[in-house]
Length: 129
Image 1 (spheres, one colour):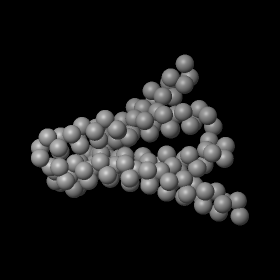
Image 2 (tube, rainbow, N blue to C red):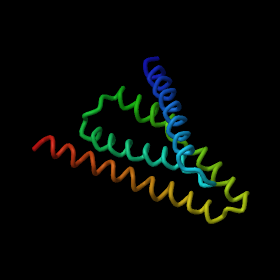
Image 3 (cartoon, rainbow, N blue to C red):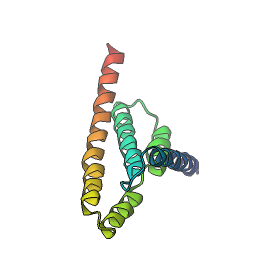
Image 4 (cartoon, rainbow, N blue to C red):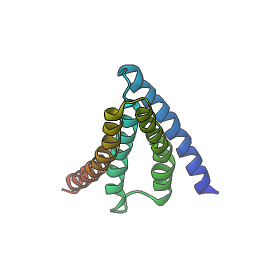
């Protein structure tokens, strides 16, 4: 039951944070490209990579990892929205924009996880020295 509460709480916080950051991005950068979803997913990728790098060394308790990785970041990032926005761009004849969206989420997302992981390793090395 404890894990369920961690997931519910983390998911709720992540969902509200996604709504806020995505909305802010859309208000600041108008246009047809769904930049808000990309910003949310890249930021979430960076954070999960950073925390993964720290957790790999045992610095994050299992319950905290469940709360953040599955709950908070699961509610924050959004694969289904990204897919729907890509499909809508194709439907609307924005093929180039749709392909950019797919490339950006996949290649940049993977890159941001890796960058976050490297940042964690460097941070831990700095703290230890």
